[in-house]
View 1 (cartoon, rainbow, N blue to C red):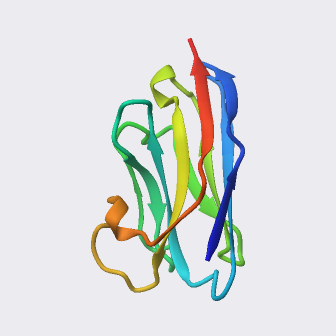
View 2 (cartoon, one colour; view 1 turned 90 degrees about the vertical axis):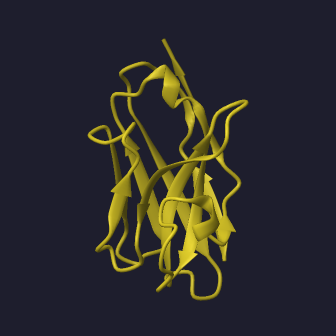
Amino acid sequence: VQLQASGGGLVQAGGSLRLSCQASGRAASNYGMGWFRQAPGKEREFVSAMSWSGGNIDYADSVKGRFTISRDNTRTIIYLQMNSLKPEDTAVYYCAARQRGRVGDFNHPRGYIYWGQGTEVTVSS
């Protein structure tokens, strides 16, 4: 499975961006998907994720109420709507896929087996 993230850019604090991640390849629709981010000098951290069924959605505390994860009906495109952006949201954002039926590590990188190349988000103050 290949993942292609897009939608990053430069935005002022308080602004919005929508990230997209297209999954392609064999059985691309059979995965739960998530978003992680990594700021310079920091470890990769969880942002949000949605299980394959859509029944499990989670957000990092730092983005709750501001970010919304969603996907299209084919289960191959996942979105991250980011509102009220803050300078501390600046990072490279990665989408990732986890196997359908995978249990545990929903908000940890080790729970995901495929990763996109990342899209950069810069929020200016």
